[in-house]
Amino acid sequence: MLKFWKKKPVEPTATPDAVTPEERVEKVADAASIDAGPVVSEALAETVLPEPEAPDVEPDAEEASIVEAAQPAKRSWRERLSGSGFAKSLTTLFVRHPKLDDDLLDELETTLITADVGVEASSNLVEDLRKRMHKREFADAGDLLKALRRELVALLKPVEKPLDVSTFSPFVILTVGINGVGKTTTIGKLARRYSDEGRSVMLAAGDTFRAAAVEQLKTWGERNKVPVVSQGQDADSASVIFDALQAARSRGTQVLIADTAGRLHTQGGLMDELGKIGRVMKKLDTAAPHEVLMVIDGTTGQNAISQLRQFRQTAGVTGLVVTKLDGTAKGGVMFALAREFGLPIRYVGLGETATDLRVFDAEAFVDGLLPASLGG
Ligand SMILES: Nc1nc2c(ncn2[C@@H]2O[C@H](COP(=O)(O)OP(=O)(O)OP(=O)(O)O)[C@@H](O)[C@H]2O)c(=O)[nH]1
Ligand SMILES: [Mg+2]
Image (cartoon, rainbow, N blue to C red; front, side):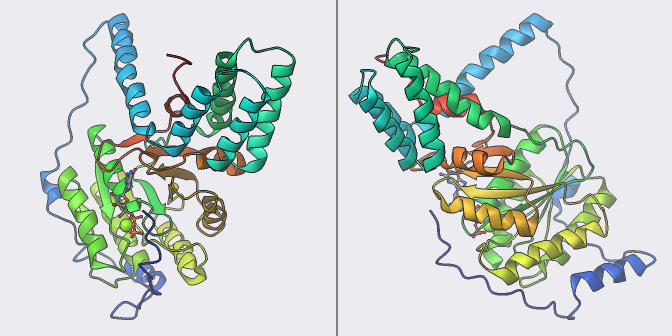
């Protein structure tokens, strides 16, 4: 769970030779040749990219298998989300109020607000449903459930915009977020996903505050056979990420994912460091980072709104990952984020293992929260 009160990152210390990343960039740019190069794990040499396989099935059979394959995937969203407080209270609500009336709608509003959907969004949604009920649009609570599903999907559909990492090479993803939200774990899961898609991946250990953070990233790297660029503890984060970008470019790596230390959105100095990382990257590639991925803990509630507001301002967030939606998360924050910012939700975390990161799917998510049918 949230552990930001435990760890208090300090301002980054200067590198041993007291060279700022900006100066370092100048030095590297001035140098005729790059000597020692970055520290890259030997796993690079072992990385063998699988050949893309030609489809050997008839189009119809292929379509059928895609549909078939999608069913267990949808089922697994439901299995994972069914433990969440939001899904439980929605199911209980319809069991306790099988009758379509104002009481059902009043409780629905309370349920949405309690799940962190946001007061205004919840009230608007419920008032709209109430009007339609009074106009006798719904025959029973089952019809109301169907309308609720459509409304909830409509709130999330605009932010269902998957990340396309094939637009640049290397495609650079900078992950940001407060402490303990699941940044490093998400990077590990992304490394697995992109490797499985046949892409070459490199990780940059930009969380230089804790030795354990570098080790944690290296473990994910080894597990997925992807190289991890790191420097010693207390190295400058921007310098590590700069080295990694340089290495990724020279090796023709397709996706570079940079980790950063967790920081509170209220810590001005640390927030400024994210801006510096971006500026340093731009010296090598003016379009980098191509995605600033903010990781948000799904159990956070409304505080996620102020976190995102601050990170967007300082780090230019372009996409979101909402983690920990399995377990005790209320999940309503997804709707609040979508409504308030309209930023793409790229992925959601539904567990701790490598395959528990899903491309965000508005329908699958809403269906995972709502009872499948009433009395069924
Ligand atoms: N249940 C669940 N746990 C998750 C998920 N994503 C991450 N975690 C857990 O959350 C904890 C923190 O994850 P980290 O990846 O270390 O978080 P971080 O943001 O890198 O943390 P700092 O580097 O300390 O800021 C770990 O125990 C992860 O296993 C998820 O989707 N579901
Ligand atoms: Mg981390």
